[in-house]
Length: 415
Ligand SMILES: *[C@@H]1O[C@H](CO)[C@@H](O)[C@H](O)[C@H]1NC(C)=O
Ligand SMILES: *[C@@H]1O[C@H](CO)[C@@H](O)[C@H](O)[C@H]1NC(C)=O
Ligand SMILES: *[C@@H]1O[C@H](CO)[C@@H](O)[C@H](O)[C@H]1NC(C)=O
Ligand SMILES: *[C@@H]1O[C@H](CO)[C@@H](O)[C@H](O)[C@H]1NC(C)=O
Ligand SMILES: *[C@@H]1O[C@H](CO)[C@@H](O)[C@H](O)[C@H]1NC(C)=O
Image (cartoon, rainbow, N blue to C red; front, top):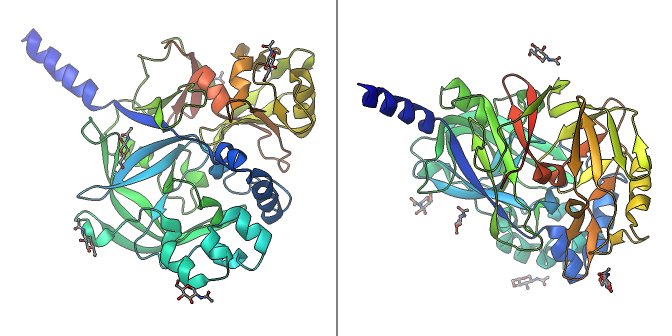
């Protein structure tokens, strides 16, 4: 009897907590720096984005070209695979669709030679659109063929997202989405909303990412559809309405395991069970109040609205605060920093607790002998959050995202 109960309980809990391996890839920034194309790219992005490198907060604000942590997901039955960002900074899930005939918004910048060469494939920028369209249908990404999926349901709605440098658009469908590795215990979510892009923004060119899987709230989904984890929870597939993100530090290693997302529970293998929760101030992004920061002599207790965002590779602060921190850390005029620079750790106070982001988390190894400061400065519009706590913060503390209770928790990394 006891054994039966044990088995039943065991079966229940393991069936409802799922782990998803992340893959660390080389960021586009790091690759372009090596190729010597980064400065041009940055200029082109800023130009197209009205003077901002990062997206303003009107929609998503991620700099998707610079992602380092990706994951495999599948859509449909039998499963078709895609490499996506699991992004707490947005809510839509989209992948390229096989009906994509468009050669992307690159076509629209072909005539601006320098912008085109910074963003798009060489074949586009030569002005030979024939070659471009053949080679670069949907930017050469993997595409979803709904005709091959027995579980696909069309719904006729259009779909689109405006990014800073262009838009992605297409239509909306529903299908079974599997999160987790093939062969492992996957979270299988029938009837998930899927954005099927037939046109992609140029910023997605030249990067091995097929699409984006948003993990934030329905209020910032472009069609207000349920993001996949909400659908999963409503279907009773998850033990608890939370997911835990553990990001692993891998220096400049590429294409290696880069951490784990645990759906439906805590990650007891990599994260301390002592979790400090704070209520969200807005359930759109994972937005909350931060009271203080310090980095050596750079310090302020003005208080800010901030977000936790797996989809941003840096910590973004208001430009005035960035300038203080850059000075405290000894960042050079060209934005680089000595790879072995030593400066004070970044300390953040949230809900009365102090969190430390070690200085070594703030030095990004882009090359063997060139490093970048992992903090950036950007001023977002009034009423928008003012800081983005991206990957360096999440590598320092496991983040536990409570999408039903609308809170977020932080726990020490133990592995
Ligand atoms: C474009 O490329 C195609 C295929 O290689 C070639 O046949 C055509 O002549 C090219 N057109 C121009 C204007 O270069
Ligand atoms: C998927 O569909 C395409 C065209 O509709 C077909 O050529 C292809 O063989 C199909 N693949 C599978 C695995 O069924
Ligand atoms: C992701 O999928 C690719 C094949 O598309 C496979 O080679 C790779 O091992 C997968 N990675 C993980 C972590 O599952
Ligand atoms: C957080 O929100 C919950 C309800 O969602 C409430 O019970 C709790 O008191 C709040 N905590 C704080 C510190 O405001
Ligand atoms: C730091 O690295 C530079 C090269 O990047 C080297 O010249 C210098 O000696 C190093 N300093 C220390 C203290 O290791």
